[in-house]
Length: 77
Image (tube, rainbow, N blue to C red):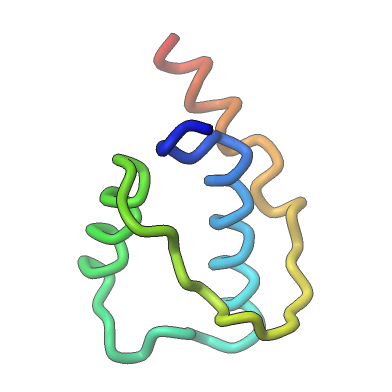
């Protein structure tokens, strides 16, 4: 098992974050945008896994990010 997240795992976390924002506003009121960016990049580099919703049941809309990885990979490959 790789210590780095897969494109699919990253897309799921993006969907979770977007769904939380759309439904509830924010799940991290004490953090800044910069805190979120730093935590996300550290995770991509093999750091601690995101703790977005603490097990709360939310409706995650995966269609929001269906092609996020595809467009990036095509642009830089």
